[in-house]
View 1 (cartoon, rainbow, N blue to C red):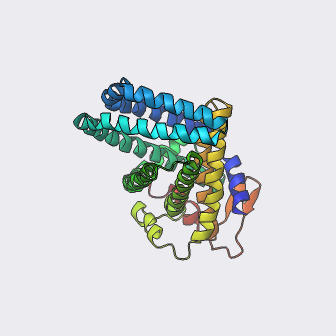
View 2: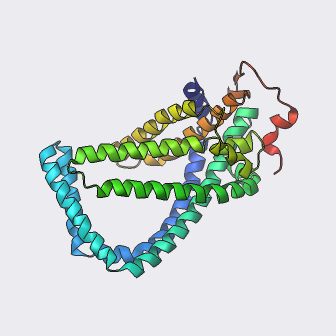
View 3: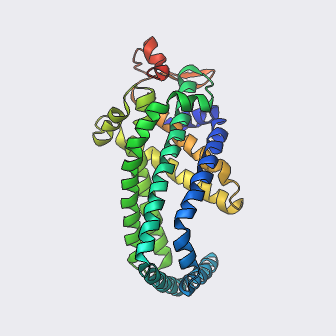
Length: 320
């Protein structure tokens, strides 16, 4: 049922996809240029090495072989890829000081970039919230500036926490890479399976954060407390929904990458965020027995509806 309701909310807020896209492009261009500047010294050094050229050629041959579904040849080339990667890693170790400085600058830029991306996601969720509660067509920029203080405090907490989680996940995935599994298809299966599981867990544990602020009127710090005590939050139900959404999002974006040569990602990437934000809001309303609009003609009313005061109804405009 929540899947159906999420789809309706997503359609009702589809125009927000283009606004979020424009915002993301601006952030990507600004911080992408800064990140490239931070990494350019090591990119240039590694990219001009013979070891890197060998790795690139082996990866290309591996991709060609995999598309021919030749498992035996793929396994042999996979071994060459792993050997080439070890050679590149030796080049990286030989310039450890330069790498450390560049990566430090890159991480700082990445954290600031994620902070601004988080502000955009909060604004998009606010637009969805206003549509669900009042059928109000709030401009993206208005939502962005109106909630800037709360969104900033939320992002200051959210970004470092999720960054630590993501770094731990990357370390785990890197460990899987170092296991040197000889069968490339088995390695890919395990790698993608673990990647999907980690994404699902992350989305499940952070699902209520923004809705708790917008619908529940909680402060950013208080909104995050239920993450560490999910009793009565229907965790398994939320997790099972995210299994569908994460797999669907990955499939659609991969299809857009290959079948539209990447052009479709300009639509599918921001749309993916709108779908996930829509589900967060729908899930929060259903869990907390709050009524909401699917569209201008349809209101979802829970079986045991919690009385909503005028203050609750206009909660999105409080404390701005």
